[in-house]
Length: 200
Length: 200
Image (tube, rainbow over all chains, first blue to last red; front, top):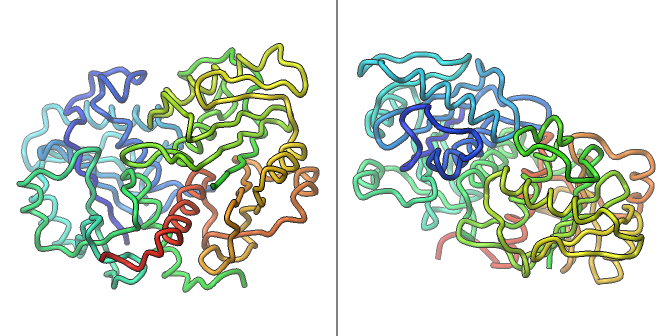
């Protein structure tokens, strides 16, 4: 099992926005859409053994589970519509409650630190994607890694404090978009799982 | 210099479509948008030394040049608007003519085979992304590679014939979307150019 935690500082906490202005009125929801695409979509199907946690403003978590996920298409706009349903579904939930908005997408009011504790309890081992980290191709990786990455803004000091104990992993010499990092991590894990050395 | 040639079998040859239905009415233009994003965008800026050729229906080529490219944002919809301007600009051009629709985006009526001849004359060496190819991490790569990939459909027999002489490169054990392949190729080239072995 693999997980990704995308920390969003600007995405909305409710669903009242237009699908035609994701980078503006929807608080860069386009970033979370691309991360969702990269976390789950293969050329012919969905990665089943993946979980994606969109941790929005340290208050709300949208959790996507590959095994149960339905209706996910590659284009940004349709993914935004799914996330909008989740954000709408979150309204009225009490702390501790969670609800499924569409198959495989669940929301709950939860901060980053609580999320890290919860998934660690399920067996995930968090790692932080960081340009100063150990190069992924040489790094030992756990069986159930949970890669934490930020949106277009840096982690806040409070977030850094929540993450300080976890190993840091880097992907290369250039600073990339979060969704690109997800693609690269998946490829590294795919190669390791298949013990890939090239074409047979 | 690096180039990517994305062969599209379904994208429109003119600009009369809605930006709100890219996967449907716009003939999977969303695929070309994502390829454009991955070809050029870094976290903080544009890759200057990249060219992207969108070879549509073996008739029209939209050519994007990193060094001159302007107005490219990460979201699909705004990229689609740029490509729509290019497709609109193509109308009325004679064979052999080309025109710039916005800075760094140029269109011309040209088939895949003519495109391959033209860029080979400029110094590019085409390689084909193919699951049966040599694993990219072990493959020798030219200084000016031009990676050819297809959209959601396989290459046609005629396209395969145009590509038969070029080396084939694979990226891993799973079948990925074209835009994901571009991200992986860039990373491999970034690592080689920087002689990257991990954090300093």
